[in-house]
Amino acid sequence: MGLILYTIPVLGLLGLLYTLWKSAWVKKQDPGTEKMQKIANHIYEGAMAFLKSEYKVLGVFIITVAILLAVSADSEYSSPLVAVSFLVGALCSSLAGFIGMKVATKANVRTTNAARTSLGKALEIAFVGGSVMGMGVVGLGVLGLSILFIIYSNTFGVSQAADLNRV
Image 1: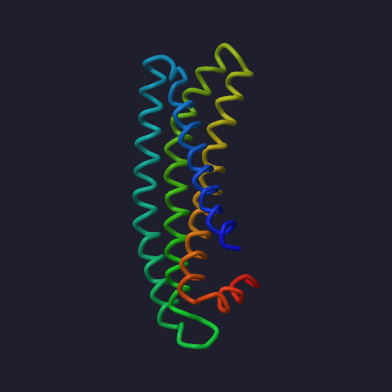
Image 2: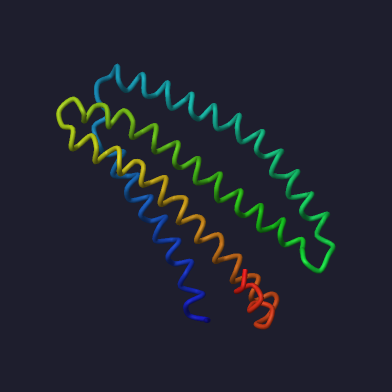
């Protein structure tokens, strides 16, 4: 289990490298006319303002739930580490949403501009932009879960790690 366990985070990192690579590719595409770029910038600013507002509310919810999970973890079937796992998952998910929104708003204007001359190129930009979000979720999820699994299995020892395998 040792070698396989430590290669899984590498797969998560590969997913994140794909995300960076394709994000850079999207940004290299022609963003269109000055008017298109101005409109796209307004959309981007609105999307980022929305995320800022959403993450403020979400942050309060996440902290509240994490506290409730930690406080209620006094039985043999639960642990305060459930709250830690919840926080790591929420962080990974929030980061994936931020990355996805950032790339999506950049891909939109580039897709629109490409559609002026080539439907194929527009579809390519749109699909690559969408794949950044998808692979970001997968990469961060695999990375977060595998790191938690490694930490927990090293903390609890092999016999209790076997119990984690059944989960």
